[in-house]
Image (cartoon, rainbow, N blue to C red; front, side, top):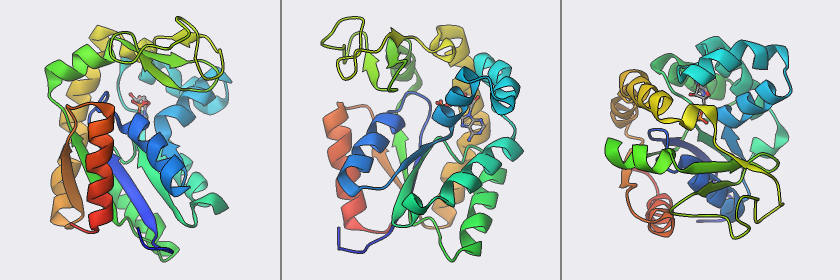
Length: 223
Ligand code: AMP
């Protein structure tokens, strides 16, 4: 990547595709922040803020929080100075309305998304992956009971925090989240293809394989 290149990235893909894991890796590599609306909302739920109280029930059901709420969250977050050199949006946009508003808010400050990468994984594999997923309550690090267990057993091997299964990772909720993805978010694949921003990578390999493809795709430049 050339010095001074701005990376304004959207990671698209169904829940369980590995967006969060890959976003964290990109953060370490390029020094740009990961903006995960899901993580911001989970923090708000944990702290029982007015936003968290509004979002909790919808998140537990596996349906989307209102566009207005998440658009507000992202607008505020993108105004932080650490987004100047770029950012990785993980879990946003999730609807056409969110994508339209994102374009507008970036345009106001002379910016634009310059990479949209869709991580493609089939439904059976997603169900298998996600129902084994474990998250650290303290630092948010992700593990998998089968594919990526913590070296410290039922504690986080990074910070020793407690590992838990997100309520919305249980199987029934997961089915609903995948339906919601297909209905409300998948149309963004065509939306960004139309804007000539979309590249798709196969997300069914190992974390390292996907990372390699993702970096190659970013380093290669535009679609
Ligand atoms: P995630 O961690 O990205 O899978 O998000 C967890 C949950 O947070 C989703 O199932 C939604 O209820 C909510 N959420 C996260 N991001 C958005 C978004 N961009 N639009 C609407 N709801 C969202």
